[in-house]
Image (cartoon, rainbow, N blue to C red):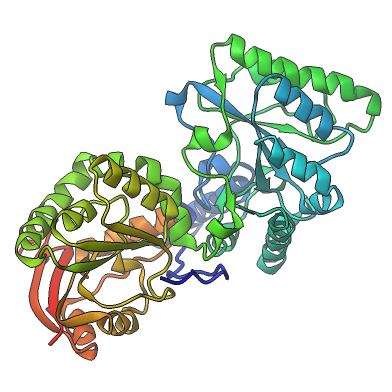
Length: 493
């Protein structure tokens, strides 16, 4: 297998559908109905929507424009410390010393221009085990009023500066915590997530030093992401007081019986990765890396478990008659291994290819527990990696929805099938009910999952020289609505 393309770019159909879009559609529909009652009354829902959109940028935790990370897990019974606006030669060395004294690892949302000026401070932050986040290149407080191109440039320049230190940042914190409707698309295309906070000191960038600790500790609770600042106050004589206030925050949090853990630990997802791990980062990678630790628990939720039951029973039954002990299998998008172990127990070798390195790590851990050593793990996009040899079977279970150009992909995959080999997959089936799950997914992931009809799949298989053997649908098979999931098995002549 070859390496992934080092250029990060979207490999899915971006569709950042926010609650604001649905609210806007609803406001216009309501206005249209009310217009026949009174033109003046029709203006009310539109005015309310405009007011909501004007307020929302200052309250990102409303999530009106995009998903944001504002809190961590309460179950950790801990908080995370984050510091904005650094690094600073006047404050960062003192801060790092204080954090080391108390055994605290924090997340530093740094300004790219400052990081470029003080490389030794960035190296010191990293060498002490702290995490870094993107806080734009220049910290322009009016950035969210500017064009998407300017916003993207600010993000990219900061990413570029920090890449010199061998890291790729996965979290972006907007200046002053203000967002705008276009931010989500800019972040999605770069594999970034929006990180805000749940507890602030209202220190106005260290312009209001006195009482920092009291303001933070008054309402701090488990799961809080605390934001402070790593920059010198205008009155340099206040630096000692600022340091004491930060220390009071640390000791005060612990006196309340709460721990202080790294941000990545509190939110159960990486805040930064090495440059090599970040190569080829795309929206799907970022999303699944973020939920890898909780994915299996999510699949056990009643609604999801019920919808998966028919698919699982059918797939497991077919695998018994399909896979032989001498077979070589390629699995696309194994995730945390819902079917991978079953494949590995039946086949000679399994090559598991997934865009999410974090999901593969969970899968590898499971395989080790079951003493399965015949799985090869490859992180990357199946359309961009080279494959060694041919396979008896190629499998993909609920992963092809992310591929916009499925016809070209299947043609490529067919070349790697042995004559008589099988292409076995499940994918989203285009139906009335599936459309609404696509809407829900777009609001959650910012990507459009492609659902396809049986006719489309037949055409795609025919173009690749594959003959369908099985085509079944599962889930909500009603008279007016065929199943939401399409199960397909095709043979190479």
